[in-house]
Length: 273
Image 1 (tube, one colour):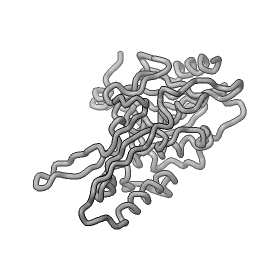
Image 2 (tube, helix red, strand yellow; image 1 turned 180 degrees about the horizontal axis):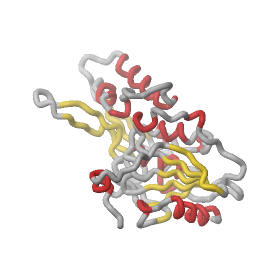
Image 3 (cartoon, one colour; image 1 turned 180 degrees about the vertical axis):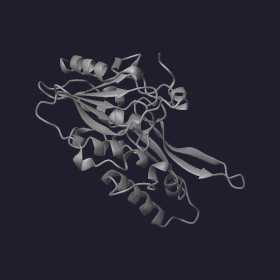
Image 4 (cartoon, one colour; image 1 turned 135 degrees about the vertical axis):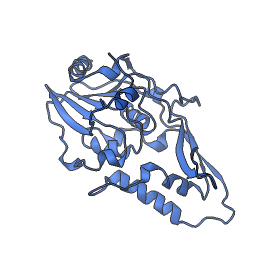
């Protein structure tokens, strides 16, 4: 019977779930992208991952239970599998960002920028994030630390996604569930912006409407806290999807229970569309 994820973990039934790309056979490829943190991806040899082959028909990108982190890890995993030049970029999704001299330091405290425990070369996207915030912290600021609000207009919305693959084109299934949150939801948007992608599963967690979390501790007590430094407008109509999540094209109520057999069956259905 189905068991809540936390209960499974407490009972010691949680299995290792490393990031990987593997072939299920008959042109069905499976890419597992767990939570986007350095501990999950530090041992991945990105250059050695399987590359696309002429007979590939369906790519399943499994984002279930991915709580977020840095979507750059996902981009590195899928390099060569998706057309990065055609995917939506963060600056194309309308958002409002609050900034001041405190912004870089609050962002640096995020676990997303913590390279401890990483071995070998860091992924390109991750290095760029680290360098970006180091550059921000090094630049001078006015002494009164003024607050600014930057608004980016909407250039693409999640409502514009449209599954319309070309004949013979490899289909992509973005498989999500209610534990896909934060940068996992942005990764879902990236994939959904491609015409050969269909989003399947259940609504995502809904924790990405308020963006750019900053982390610090309260004085005297040392209690940690985080605050949202911005707001996203991914649907383009100023709705908040926090708590409701991104909707899907194909609803699969028991998506948490899907194994290789069921995923192959799903791939065959999508391959015919």
